[in-house]
Image (cartoon, rainbow, N blue to C red):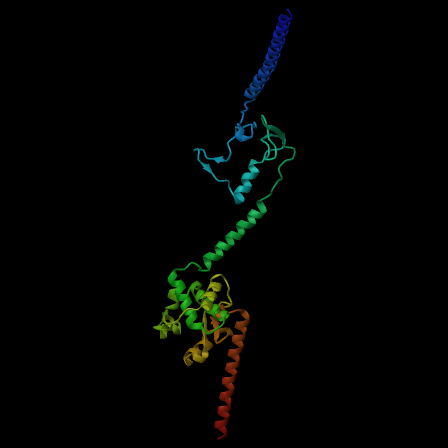
Length: 313
């Protein structure tokens, strides 16, 4: 009898445990189903353990820029990038959708934010106009400076500068290059460097290194290359000079022609630089007239003295 009661008590305890376990399993099942339904309805997804078991929301918008044909292109830069950024800035009061930053995780959905402050207004008209005008002036300057040249022109310019001013300082070499470039721009002379250097006037070469062949024998130095580089980049000391002469090495009739028919501008090193009288600065023109008057007076005085000497005899 006692054993029978013990058996009945044991069976009752087992039944209670089963009932309790069933209740727990039921609660867990309901919770799991609720969570699953919530995730499905929100459009989320569970990430495996390799993704830290986090749930993220996906954006429906495409990242990047695409053309009409579907091909992507890089973000614009420079002024185009500024203009693109301004166009993409949302207007005041509009709603924008943000996913979270790298420091915050958005479990489901997206945050909605209203733009409180309007985009800053940027007036590009003045700087853009200045930039365009500056570019135009540079293009005009470049087109009129004869900086575009062939390899032959460049090599010949190096050689004539070396032959004419290889013993001069950098400025003296720049000056020779300046005269060559001034002639290229002048309507009376050829319009390219090679033809200017090898020009003959009534069978006479314009440059002595061409006449005696030195232009083909020189070795161009780094100093000459630097001087030519400076001249081509716009360094100009010439005051518009079209001629130069080294009187210590020139023939007398050439010296006489320079002094009679041209106007002297200045001297640098062993060279004296000249231009046509009508193209000389006003102060040089006045100086030339004064020299002519002084020369005539000197000639008249010499003639008077000669006459007086003849009469005295």
